[in-house]
Structures are given as C-alpha cells and as structure tokens.
Amino acid sequence: MFPRLTFLGAALAAAPFAFLLPMLANAQGTAPAKPGESKSAPALPRDLTGIWEPVRSIEGIQPSGALNMPADGKPEHDLHFTPYGLEMAKRNKSSNGPNAVASTEENDPAHVCEPQGFPREELFEVRATQILQNPLQVVMLYTYGRVWRVIWTDGRELPKDPDPHWYGYSVGKWKDDYNFVVQTNGTDERTWLDNAGRPHSEDLRVEEVFHRVDHDHMELSMTIIDPKVYEKPWVALNKLQFRLKPATTELPEMMCSPSELAEYNRKHAGPGAKKK
Amino acid sequence: MLRSFISPTLALIGVLGFAPLADAQGTSQVVPSKPSTPAPLRDLSGIWLPKIGAQGSGAAAMPADGKPEHELPYTPYGLEMAKRNKSSNGPQQVAAVDENDPAHACDPQGFPREDLFEMRATQFMQTPLQTILLYTYGKVYRVVWTDGRELPRDPDPHWYGYSVGKWTDDYTFVVDTNGTDPRTWVDNAGRPHSEDLRVQEVFHRLDHDNMELTVTIDDPKVYTKPWTALKNVRFTLMPPNTELPEMLCSPSELARYNKTYAPASKKK
Image 1: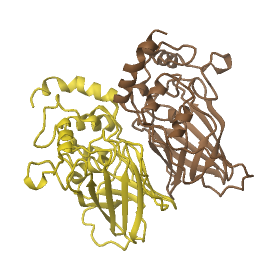
Image 2: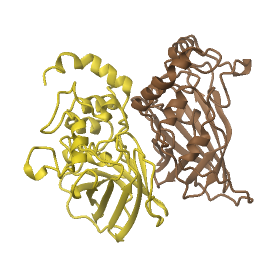
Image 3: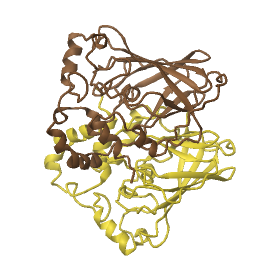
Image 4: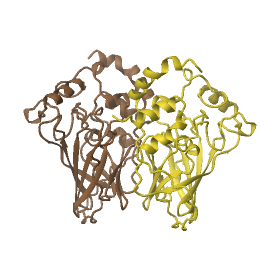
C-alpha cells in the first residue's frame, strides 16, 4: 500500500519537518507548477473561483510561524505582547522558533489532531485551496485538514457576541472589482495563530485581503487584531502569492489521524525524541 | 458555551437524539409548507436537510437490530472483519470500554459512513467539472468529478475515496465511489468494508424543495451480494442563508468528556 499522505502529514508536522511535504503532496495528484508563467489575461471582476496554490511552496508551509512575522529571533519580528498576551505566549510551547522546546515538551494542540482552526489554516500548511462562490457565500476548501470555511457575502454583519468556533465567523465584501476583504471574529482561543505558537484571545479579529492581480495570480494579506494579547495590530501575511491551477487539479487528502500519529510515534519517537 | 464538544462525545455513547443541540448551534429548521415548484435541471446546489436523524444503529435501511431481514450476507473473509469491529451499537454490541470505533478516537469517519451516520444539513455546490458536498459532521468536503472521467483502476486508499458522478436524466444524479480506506467503518454498527468497496449513490431530485438519496454497498470481498444502505431518504431544501453548525472531533474534548462521564458508563 502506498504510504498515506494523511499519516505523513500529521506525523511530519509533529516532527517538525513539515517543509518536506510539498513533493509528497504533489505526488498524490496536485499537478506541478508550470515554470515561466508571466503575462496573464485580466481577471474576471469580483471572482476568485478556482484552485489556488502558493507560488512558492515553502511560503505556504510557514514552518517558523506567520510568513511575514516568523519567530526567527530578529528584533523586527518580535511581537508586542500585552502582559496578558505574554502569559498566554509562555503557555504555548512550540518546537519551532527561538523559544523552541524539545519535541517531548511541546504542546501544540494540532499535533494531537485538534482542529488547527482559523487563522492558522492560512498561517501554516497553506496548500492548494479551492475557492467557490454563490450569490451569498464565498467558500474555501482547504487541503490541510480537508475542511471547508464559509465567508458570508450577503451583507450581514459579524456577530456581536459570538460563541467561539474553531474556524470563527467570517463576512466578506468586495472593496472594488479585484479586492475582496474578509473580517473574522468568534475564533476559539484554544487554537494557535501559527506554527510558532503565537496565541490569541476570543476577541481576535482577523482581516484578510484577497487581491486578484490578473487571471492567473492572486495575493493574500492578513492582519491580526487582538488588543487583549497584542498592543497593536500586526501583519501576518503581506501579499502571499498564489497561482491559479488547472480546474482539473485534484487536491490531495491530508487529514490528521490519532491512530496514525500513535503508530508513527511508536516507530520513530523513541531515541530521536531525546536528541533535541 | 456550545462547542463542537457535543458531537464526538455524544457520538461516542451512541446517543441518537442530539439534533436539538446541533440545531442550537445555528441550523434553522425551516421546512417550506407551500407546494413546491419544479426543480431546475441537473442542479442539486443548495443546502439540504435529511429527514432522518443520526443512524445510531447502523445504516437506516439495514439497521443492526437483530431482525433476520437485516442480517448481512458476509463472506467468510467479511465475517472475520466484522468480528474485529467492536461497536457499542447493535445486537453484538460491547461495553463502551471495549469498543474500538475508530471515529470515537477522532480518526476521520470517512466515506460512506459520512452518509450512513450523523448525516445532517449538507450543502451542495456545483462547478462545470465537479459537484462538491460540504458535510456538517466533521466539517469535511467531498469532491465528485463530473467531467466524464472514469474511476481510477488501482486507486490508493483515501478516507473519503474517489468519486465520479453522471446525470442519468435531468433529475437523477448517480455517483460511484471507490478507493476508500478499509480502516473506516461503513456505519455506526461497525459493518466493515475492504479496499474493493464500490458505493453507488443515487440523488433523485423530486421537485424544487425535495430530494431523495439511495445508497448501495457493493463489496464482493466482504459481502456475497450488494445491499441497500439507504433507500429513498428524503431531503428538504433549506434557505440559502442557513448556517451549518460546526461539528469537529477534538481529542482533548473527548478526553475531558470521558474523564467526567466514563466511570458511570463503565458500570453499566
């Protein structure tokens, strides 16, 4: 039996070698990107439909945390925590970043198959993503976790006192023909923002801007706004570039399985776990 | 606080009646009372609510209720597989502490169990090449290719298999699936399947507001003949602004629930 990507996905993410995954994912059906794509036809107005993949795979994987603010120890990437936020950050023990702990000490909830939630879905393991539209919704189909997410476009407002949900509550508006702005609240503070364990509270607001550059290209920017945890908003993604894939592209299946994870850890975690 | 917590935990103990809890999470059960108009042609798009609840005792048309007419025709190989699946439902049910339902440990429940247990409001979306199903349970999607491709001949196993669909007439959409993962159970009673499983779903749109689903299981390695798992299960079209609740399995929630409630269950 061919080794399952689901197993590898969960296990390697836990191991933190997730950056090895793109070629494995491609092997399961995602067609390789065509080199040299440049001049593209204009895009249809107010339309993001299609299958989109980060132009550079590693920029989607984001193993060290949000692409625009990696936890790499550089002063310009230090986040401005509130005292409350700093306490939250200390509780999140990641095996990535300058404060990395040994893999036996880490407590990444996604590594035990908790839903990784939003916005981490776009700040870690961003892979081929299909976008669908109907008159009331934009729907995202993510590869990682095989989850869908609804963005309401019928003019409704964000809920004022939302119950927390793993993937929050999202509404979107077209600012012009090529810029789609999405606001999200109601996220679940048990989730991490990114692979470096940046925390958030239930007051988190996320703003995504999808900018369709031309027919074949799109950029995604994301701002994190959480005054309980961060003294000021910060930019997690700054024009992450996506390329349109053929409409026949098959998204690979990447699902976390506790039984696969247990099997992997049983086989590999023994001596290796002590090396760190 | 209403969280996804309730879904895996109540599934674990085999409770049938938690539809009201799920509804409290956002699905409004508005059923149109006016006579329905004809359906659009070759179109299933919309949010559909099945008129059955959780299929706690197994596939609705073949529950594991001990009745002779619901005995499945196992092959010897299939019978061995069936014995290994220990469900806390059905006539061969075991105590909760002895069951080994993979979905109760938050493994993906996979297909066809997605249709045969906890089928709830399901959104259909169509593109020129695909019909896409957004399931409530597990917040998982499934792609049915409609571009004329055939099923793969030697598919790698996947939790949700590989599906192709064709319209046999303007109101009947037939989906064939293979490439499923034999680690998953067919239904909540632990009916097994092999990698050779073929599933056929027939979605028949009756009119604008109503649809029926029939599901047939065909796995000659496990069953001596095909059997009908769902027969004309009725779905009603929901308003397009219906919010599907979020039901995701969380190992930590499950552990907390079991810690709180399992001791009492164990004594049963």
